[in-house]
Length: 138
Image (tube, rainbow, N blue to C red):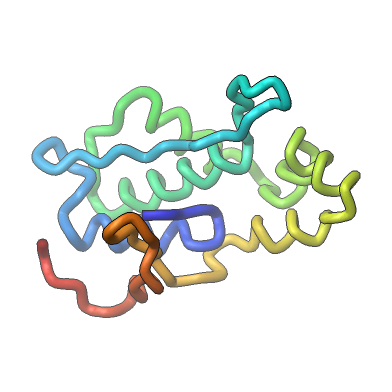
């Protein structure tokens, strides 16, 4: 599934409702990052904060135990007082602002603006599911 700051809590709720995030049904949350012009990996603060937000929601619903990496991502999110300002001041935010896309940073950091959970099905994301809807266990 795809997630970001805009739907992090919805994704966390959806995963928890399906029983993921436990020792019996572990879940992997990946802060994808970006690429530098030379193709090497560029860690992205917005992806780390989004992953941390999902993990925080899972933990609030009883998920665990958390790996050290998951706990660190959750703590980064929880301890960032102003996510929008932090992302605007990071490499990605500065790059977007310089390219005329500062508004995109504000939109991307609208925490929990969406309850949609886009799910990859047969190689494409479907319209997603509303995290507030009843979801059968797979």
